[in-house]
Structures are given as C-alpha cells and as structure tokens.
Amino acid sequence: MNRPRNSAAARTVPPFSFLPMPAFMALVAACVVMMTAIAPVRAEERIIRAHGISTFGELKYPEGFAHFDYVNPEAPKGGTFSTWGFGTFDSLSPYILKGNAAALSSVFFDTLMTGSLDEPDAMYGLVAHTIEYPESREWAIFYMRPEATFSDGTPVTAHDVVFSYEVLRDKGQPSYRVLFRDFQSVEALDDHTVKFTFNPDGALRELPMSAAGLPIFSRAYYETRDFAESTLEPPLGSGPYALNRVDPGRSVSYKRRDDYWARDLNVNVGQNNFDILQVEYFADYTTAFEAFKAGAYMYREEFMSLIWATGYDFPAVQSEAVKVETLPDGRPAGTQGFWFNLRRPIFEDARVRQALGMAFNFEWANESLFYGIYKRTDSFWENSTMQAEGLPSDAELALLEPLRAHIPESVFTEPAFSPAESDPSSVADRRALRQAGRLLEEAGWTVGADGIRVNADGERLRIEVLNDSASFERIINPYVENLRRLGVDAVYVRVDAAQSQEREKTFDFDIVTRRYAMSQTPGIELRGIFGGEAANVEGSNNIAGVNNPAVDSLIRTIENATSREDLEAAVSALDRVLRAMHIWVPQWYKGEHNIAYFDMYERPYTDTPPPNGMGELSIWWFNPEKAQALRASGAIR
Image: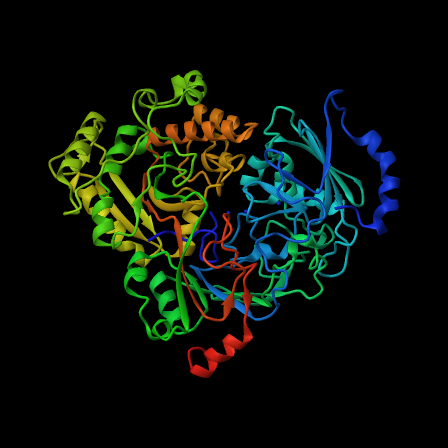
C-alpha cells in the first residue's frame, strides 16, 4: 500500500495583467516611492515586470490569458465533493506546530501568486497582478490588486503580507525559519505594493516564488488572537472557501464563497467548482473503505493494494454506480520508506543501516501481499529524469569531487545504490540475512547468549518500529520478524494517529514510515527534508535527521541551478549521495492514481490528467442529474 499524498487522506508531511484601471492613479502616485525604494541595480541588469514568474524564466501562458488550458471554463458550480482523511484533527491552523490541522484547512487563504497544473515551476498573479524583479532576483516587488478583500470585506494590503511573513517567521512551524533564511527584509512600499529583499548569496532562483506562495493573513484579525495557538475557530481569510461545519476529529467541511473577490480571475476560471468540500475522518484504511462502499463519502483514491486488487467488486461497482479508474501520474513517484532516526546512536554506522534495510523482503511482499502491482523504489526521485543511474556523469563528478571527504567512497566507485533483489518464495531470504549479519558483525554488533546482538559495552541492539495504521501491520510484522532473525531486539509499536504525529514532531522514534511527494523542480524545500539546519528543529520534515555538509552543499547547488540540465545533474548527485548513506529502507511505488468515485462527478479530461495532479478538488465538477439518478437507484442516500 502507498501512503496517501496530495489528497485529503494525506498527513501533512506540514504546502504560488495588467493593473486594473481603477488602480492606475495609485500606481502613478507610487512611482515616486519606487524610484527611491528599489535596491541598486547593476548597470547591465535587466528589470523584468510580468504577470507571472517561473524557475527558469519561461511561462506557458501569455499576459491576459483567458484561463488555463486544462480547465473547462463553462464548468457548472454546485454540489458536494466528499472524501476521507486518516487519523484525527483538533485544529484549523495548518501553519503552526501546535495541534493536528484538519485536511484542506489552507483553503481559507490566498497567496500573491498561484501555480498551474501543467507547468512544473510557474506562478501567475492572484492577489498580486504583477511582479517586478531584476535578472539576479535579489529582490521582488509585488503590485497587489486593490479589489482583493478578506471574507469580512476588509482589503488585503501590503501590510497584511508583511505581517504574514513576520508571524510565520516568529510563530509558524519551525520549517518556515529555514525557508526564510535568505529573506533579508519585507516592507510595504504603500498599501498595495510589497517588496521582498533577499540575501544576494541565497537561493535567488526560487526566493521570489517562495515569497509569491506565502499565505496571506489579516493583521487586524490577529491583533486579538494568538497565531501560535491551535484553534477550531474559523480563521479570517481571502480564499475561495469558508468553514461550513466542523465536528472535531470526525469531519470537516468548507463552503464555497459566493462573494469571493477573485472568482472571475483568469487563474480561477473553471476552478473551485464545488459548493462544499467535505472530509470524513477514519482511524484506519479498512474502516474508511467500508464506509465508502456504504456511501459515507463519494471519492476515494486507493492506496492499499489488497483492497485495490480484491475489494472493488461490491454491488455499486457492478451496477456502475461507482466508477473505478487508473490514471497516469506525471509527477515523481515519491519517496516512501522506513526512515531511520539518525539522531539515535544505534544508527550512526551506515553498515547497521544497510543491514537493517536488507531485512526487508520487497519481492516477497509484492508477490504475497501486494498482488504484484508495485515496483521497488530505489531513488528519492523515482519515476523521473532526476534519479541517479549507473556511475556518476562528468557533470555529477564535478559537483561530487570537492565533497569527497563527506560522502561514502562507493558514490565514486559503484553504480547508484539499489537494493538487491530478494527471494520472493519466503519472507526470510537467508542469503540476504547472512549478508546483513556480516555487516552487523563488522559494525561491532555480535550475537549474545540469548540470541540478541550486543555491542562491546553489552548494549542490546533494540529497535522500535512505530506505526499508526492497522492496515500497515501486515507489512511491518514480517519486517520485524526478519529483524529478529538477524538478532535485533526489534519491537513493533502501535499508536494512534495523534500519538504518532506528536512523536514524529519531537523525533521520538527509531523507525517510522513516511512518504514525501517530491517536486518536479526541487529547490528550497529540500532544506526542510534533508538539510542540516532542520535536522534538530522539532516539527521539521527532516524526519531522518540528515546533517551532512555534502548534502547541504548539493542542496545549495540545486537551489542555484540556472538551467534544467544543471538542476537535473545536481539532483542526481544528491540522490546518489543519499542512497549511499542508507538513511532509509525504500519501499515501493506505482506511477498511477487508483481512484474510485460515485458517478456524479465530471472532469475536463478523459484519460490523462494534467502532469502536476488530477485536480479533483478544483477542476472537477458536480452533475446534479447523475446524483439524482444515484439517489433514485438507492446507490446513495
């Protein structure tokens, strides 16, 4: 089974025209301020002023475009889109460390710019109609739409943007402090013009886009509220949805705002089509599936191979009331695996980590548990052109050689590490376990009188595998059994979702399963996943605690790549290093979406979604005639 990603069921692993005529005179008045406020510019440097921005400067959509190509501009509005969430929630605040935020709770907030589903790295104007920046990208000025308002009718101003940056930096999730490391200043040049100035030595390629993607909060609203405190009070936002109903830990729903200020903007045409977005919560996958069969919610992406292979033959499928489909997924397959907590002394030796990885028999699991539908993951950028292959290329070697002292020698002498194939006929592959045992012996862990490995100080090799899902037990238990065969005092620890989230936030685990959806254009987000600065920041996405100078250096190279060719070489080099470090036990992937839904939804494409996502929450729409037919047939209530 795959861990959910980019869906309501995904746990936060806590996610960018011309000036309207009424604002023209305001812009003219602001020009005098601009002339003195803009940082000095190199004499030869061109200033770019545009309706959008992309990582490498190319935009698919021209200024004044009518709508994104992948939407239906005539899509009707109405109906409910309902899906499911895993675990529980106790907060509507997705940007802070406290509490467990409800799924989709970021829908309250707009950003300066927004992305598209058919470009990997472009953003177009939302709250800001125009961005201005030098070729160096050392600063960026956003010209905001005066018509942008919060849901209470108050205007969205540059002062709110400044406040949003400051409150996220000071009170938001710790990962924001890592993200903002290269932000020098954020200032309101007037009520509708905001300027970001960046560290000239920072990741300038992406910093304007990071600024463009910040959620915007109301400064006035938080004058009487503590942003850092978890709450179920619906926040004041400027986004397309407001809170409809909340039942803490059980369900949450959001209603489309008829008075949404940006409903007719080109970036929103054909989007936000459902009147209600609803998420029902369940403690485990199997219970959630049974509820779907009973019509408790209408849409499900299936991440469990057993259910996908054997469960979709219930009456509603047979009568075609439920549609079952497999759609291609154009994104990197994601990085799902058992992650080691490198902060623990027992994981300091890479030979120990490699040995523990060899105890996982994927081939047996795929044949015996998964019905052969998965492939083994070996790369952190699986199913993409960025994954390392074979020996390092010349471009990779140019990046790796200066870092040689901090990375395994095998990076230079062996092909990119891939787990060896195991014997699928038995969960215990004796050959693999013998090799793993030799590695543990070399690392100083010998088998004691009771069959448990100990080190020279007599300390037992004890490892806990943390899990919060009953349906994942069938995968973890065989792995734990193989670890015990190796002489590891391995223990399976089952906790509920809330406990798991808290323990992961505080790094209170030995091994945990996690999945990351990797970007098609990796950059600053890698600081939070693999960067040393985030290794010991509670709540960060650096779940493994990677803290390596070579990794940090390669991340900086990725951040500053000036072409996709250079980017891919740097990502491949990083992938190669991380794989050689054995920071995880890679699991599996399937480069497709397995989905099922009651036949009341329609979409603007047939078989192939946009490359960056299916858009089920945004570009699909509700068909009331189909829904009525389902009710008449008794398929739904």
